[in-house]
Length: 84
Image 1 (tube, rainbow, N blue to C red):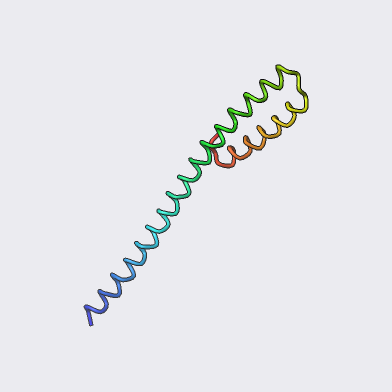
Image 2 (cartoon, rainbow, N blue to C red):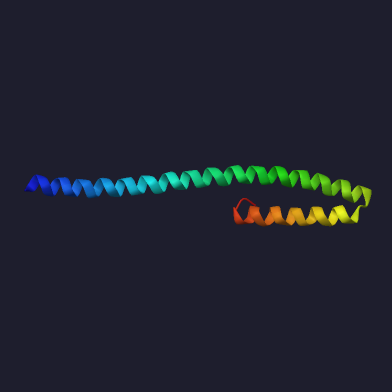
């Protein structure tokens, strides 16, 4: 009888540990994905800043406007990821 109670308690304990490990792994995967997305966004931002510079040099108002909109979208996403 005592052994059965001990086994039940151990089973509940192991289930709790399993749930915690599962949550930890999900958190690690999410953070890795966010880091990867942040790196891509920074590359996009560099490219768009170079494009904006070219547009300003060429006095191309349409391209300036489009590039600023893209940069704003990138900024918003970086803020959402708390990477800015």
